[in-house]
Length: 112
Length: 116
Image (cartoon, rainbow over all chains, first blue to last red; front, side):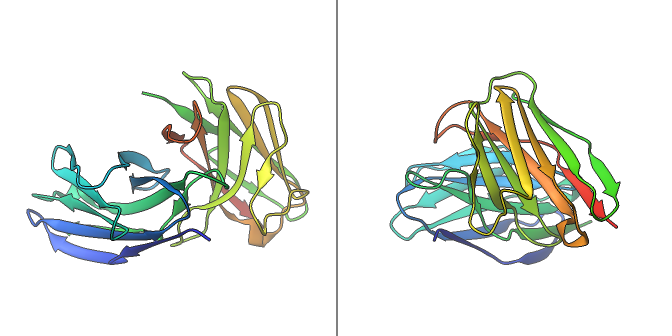
């Protein structure tokens, strides 16, 4: 059974801080790892990672995947209150079941 | 970008009634649509995968006779919760994918179901 574990489960920091969110996984026949941001409603897509060592960047957010150690990190620099959300990590396997397996998420709170 | 809508956004119903939730891909054709369920402070759990024109594939522990899925066209999938009970109260989210594995899934805004 595919498994995704995120840490920490919750994190409170001050505006301007840099945060690192972790995601480790066990999946049969790995295809991709995805990061989503979930505020009050449905998740919005951030990144899809398929190759090790290649950093993906979007503004203050960046992410990287290590397929040997089976984990990914999501970095947010110069955090703002609008970054407060639940960040979800999900994996897609290449065979068998379709759909995504999600971790429980990291609840990030940015204090002004 | 790709937009997925859900209707209704929230619904309150009495125990024993059936509720239908629609998921539409507005600007692309979705060969595959997915239904997820999210309980408070929990992550999204995949319920079923539906491909246009064929029967849905349900995850272990999800009753196919209780959660009826119809994917009649490339832009519409429906989830009907039959004989709903309070324990079915949850946030139901659909997603749509325009191709096979490796294509991005776009999520709908979700439907909050409360069963009294």
